[in-house]
Image (tube, rainbow, N blue to C red; front, side, top):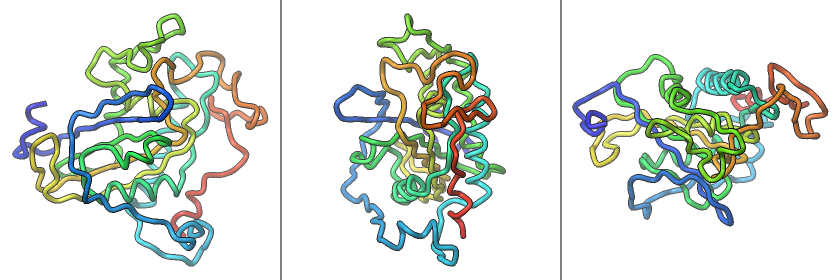
Length: 259
């Protein structure tokens, strides 16, 4: 951890999670405070809202097509292979609205969760890295690696310790990835210069923001129900099951997102 705070060290990844809410208790692992007075949020115009369905539209994206596919496929691979198996795991889709909200926050280069008003409704995983990297999954895989310190809690062990049944310092990145009802994700990546990370200035940081909906990590709840895969899918799926996951009748909108 000391090395992560020292900008002389490169090729380290650090990561962070929060899911805040109104009217319920949720995981909150904020470890630093930052002046947010200079946060600028992107406001979606009507044209932005329709851009996913306009094949000829063009606008700058803060994540590449290949990175988007890699992140989405990796999440679904992890979700399909949880142990013990999940009875109600929903297939995850890419959501361009979540990606745009991630773009807006990543562009601030603030190493903290936000904006607060959106975190009432969304889950969020953050990762930052200094130095070169070969694949976007080098920023995502550490979230999954927390499974090594996690033991799935059965109902008698869950309340109030869920989802924090963790033998290491952090498990809530992993539990957000496999939260059964969090069936949409959108991410953005940003290169940040002179980014303040836990009290140290990182001269060049690669900052990844992923937003999830509906949010997960509600205290007192396990990330999913244990059982035969797809045996407890919501009725809206009509009994459709694919690769151990409740499968929707619509395709991900990522096919339109980059047109």
